[in-house]
Length: 275
Image 1 (cartoon, helix red, strand yellow):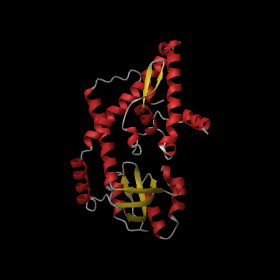
Image 2 (tube, helix red, strand yellow; image 1 turned 180 degrees about the vertical axis):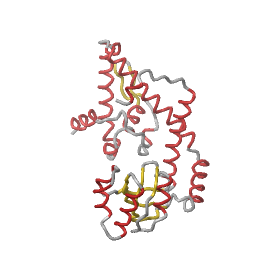
Image 3 (cartoon, helix red, strand yellow; image 1 turned 135 degrees about the vertical axis):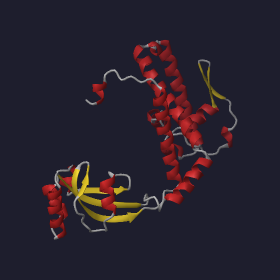
Image 4 (tube, helix red, strand yellow; image 1 turned 90 degrees about the horizontal axis):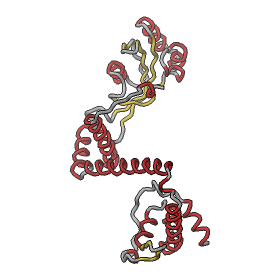
């Protein structure tokens, strides 16, 4: 059983495991040395820290059962690290390159984590939540629609298609036959969208329709459209947790925009971005 547990821990991926709170255990409060490997000390806190970062399925059992296998894992790891240093692995060019990549990833993660945490104050979250409550219904964000459209090159074509659809021809079949837009193969189905997702001319015409209604010709920068409103629905307001996630995403985007604005970035081979 011990050997099986050790094998499982040895293969557990922990480098990117999320930090979670360990189960309360007063016996882990007193830190002291539990092992020495060639003079290198391993403390009880080292064992606890390793357990905390294990995937959830490994944390469900009593900590006492994990302690021995984890300690063995840490001892073996220290032995391997010492042997690798003795063999000069840490001076290998490939290792140094990989280390630089890992360091960059870790620095990026911790830097952005700090920026996000600084932005997610209780006051900022509450203000965003209050603003969302005030604007949710009146801003149109709560109103989502699903529509189909047929895109053609001229107003005359659009008018003829509109007349045929209003006369009872199947809109999806007309779209498959006549639309020059990429959604034509799917019967013109655009899926669900909200205000702000489409170009203004198209969006205004779509939102003016009732479920099942077909528009007349509608011009946009892409050409002439005929739109059929399939259905509408009112979405529930985002929860406080969802708003917090939105603020976190905004904080990341804002910081990236600030860094780019303050930096001197030169792309010397621009063609690589389009290949």
